[in-house]
Length: 202
Image: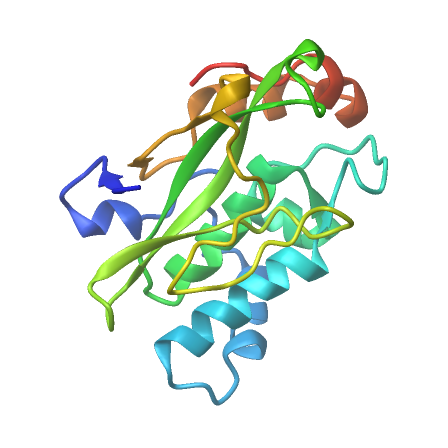
């Protein structure tokens, strides 16, 4: 799939926002630990991605009722749903000076359409060495989900099933989707939100 940037200004993919609060002391303290002595761009991106994927729990997987939204909150509590985890990944990459944005899929909540639909968030990152964007999904792996860092063939958490009217959106947004952030901002119980109150359309 050909990815399409929402903005032609790369600075839009490096900006700090309310949710991507990469000036926060905890985020600035963590980044050097992830980068260490790495100098290769791809190694740095992979290290940051794998930290968010593996060291930050997906709230549904651990059945947590806590809702996190800002990158600093996700890092503090080490948990969040995909909307929140994508904020942390984008914040860490941007702090490193690597352009990062947001991509979305429309997926069934369960295994079949009768379970309803929801919007799923993932990230896109610009590879200067490759002069192109790739998508990464830091949702978190478990049985049946195996998302990996790859510059050749995408390996995301969820393959889109067009026969179920699932949708893979090609746009790389510079900011997290307003509906997804509103869900995190207005709900108080993550399990109830995940079951009943996630946005179904962009």
